[in-house]
Length: 97
Image 1 (tube, rainbow, N blue to C red):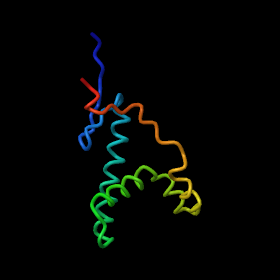
Image 2 (tube, rainbow, N blue to C red):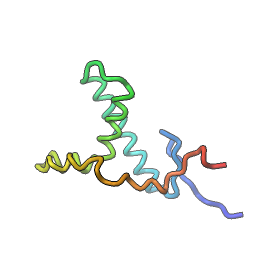
Image 3 (tube, helix red, strand yellow):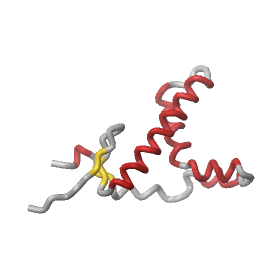
Image 4 (tube, rainbow, N blue to C red):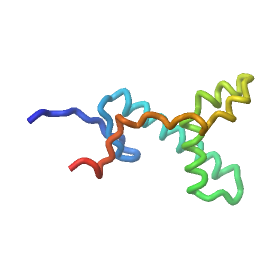
């Protein structure tokens, strides 16, 4: 029987086949959490779920946001039109048996 090393993100229990991928995912979730908290403080009436969804959207597209803030706002229009990020290295816990 072979042993396969896996890394687990404690924020959402996602599993990864490399430490680098797990760390990158954890950083995205940490940034998303802080975006969510900012939105909840600054936007009256926003639901927690909406703040989380927006936080994840902003976090996953941070490079596009940075470029937009540096003078290329048209890049924001491409968010969502590109193919989804490759999540092939993520293994949900429920899939492991």
